[in-house]
Length: 149
Image 1 (spheres, rainbow, N blue to C red):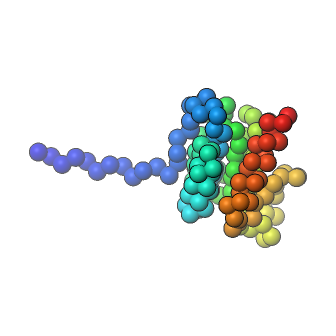
Image 2 (cartoon, rainbow, N blue to C red; image 1 turned 90 degrees about the vertical axis):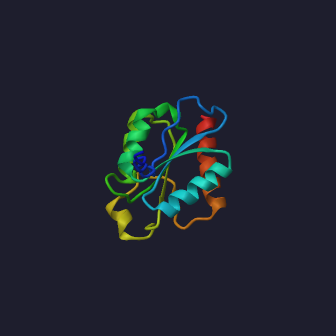
Image 3 (tube, one colour; image 1 turned 60 degrees about the vertical axis):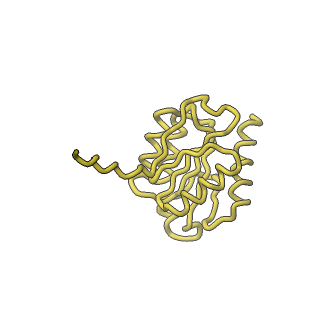
């Protein structure tokens, strides 16, 4: 009897939810090319009651978002990533959903990387490394501001 073929490696991108899947749980799209940061953010947010979809770069996050833009309540993205920056991802998101909060995170908050990839004015930026409490505070504030409008 022939052996089963090996399974393909698991994708690091998590599939987008179906619209309305978890109406009482906000759904967040998290994009970061650093596995440890992406996993930390996902775990913290899921434990806090959010549904989290992850992507390893801005291009893949853009595809996930474009497939079901109404499924997401917030996008949290690294600024510097391969294939598409967080700023490019934010522009794509806002072209489809101008009302959607987009939060940025970066380990290069004081460096030249942000000069090469400047954020739009008045955009929130989480400086890596950040504590769990700060992440949750910023995410909840952004979601609260959106729900207040």
